[in-house]
Length: 166
Image (cartoon, rainbow, N blue to C red; front, top):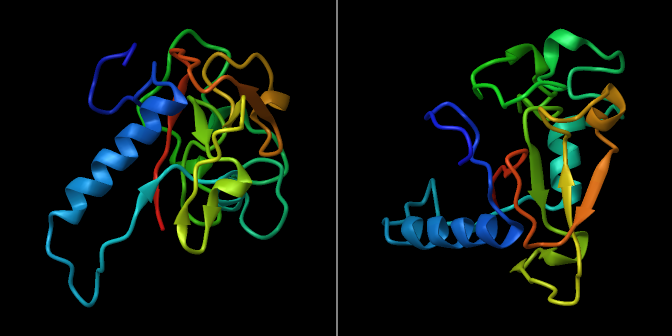
């Protein structure tokens, strides 16, 4: 990471790096015995749909916390990321925090997550980054609908990832 500390988001990772981590973690978790209450599931990056639903809930809000921009809920227009423990007020309806600001988050494209699992589409030239970051200059870049499409080997101190299980 470009910024050290256990409470800081992992950054300087490409889409490939983030997906490799997910595959590594899935394999590690597969080594653990599955139980009836917690069967093994794949760890992966969220699709854009999953990311948006976690950030927005079902009411179509503009930011994870609501429709009105609140500076005190987002980490942006500054020179480095914040601890992932800050901004609990930014929680989405599903309890996900810091979905708007802190670091951009790599996502899968919509056609890459199916009910059968993960199907990587190698024809995609660019991948999606969502959520805005500490380097975003204005609130429009932090809106849930905002996205960047960049090469999957793009690396930046303002780009990281969030994982999910399917």
